[in-house]
Image (cartoon, rainbow, N blue to C red; front, side):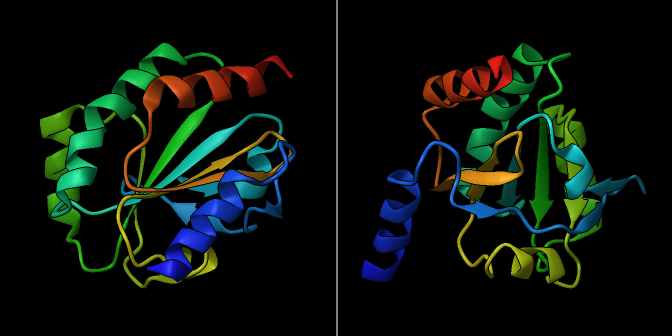
Length: 157
């Protein structure tokens, strides 16, 4: 627990410019679209590692849907990465049920969660600034008003 608290404190106290570059990986959505994280530079994005059987993850979905609607057309995007123990059919059913209009990725092999440090707790999210640097890591749910303000500040440049 102390280790997790240390990681959280490290990211919360990180400089505004970010502390570490996001991994330069290419993801594939459950619809077959490739997302090259390196090509997302210029706009912020949120990587959310989640699972369909995670109560906290399901609880935050309406907030993520709302956030994406508010920021539609700004270039911001959310990429939700389901962990290997999930099932693609469950992910698609959740998308339909909850109206998830953002990018959904199924990390079937665990490769992408390993690239972000070996995700073990859901939800775990990373806010990446327009320079491609991780500026915030969040274990558990966000204060979505604060998150929106932080993203809008990044969008202003």
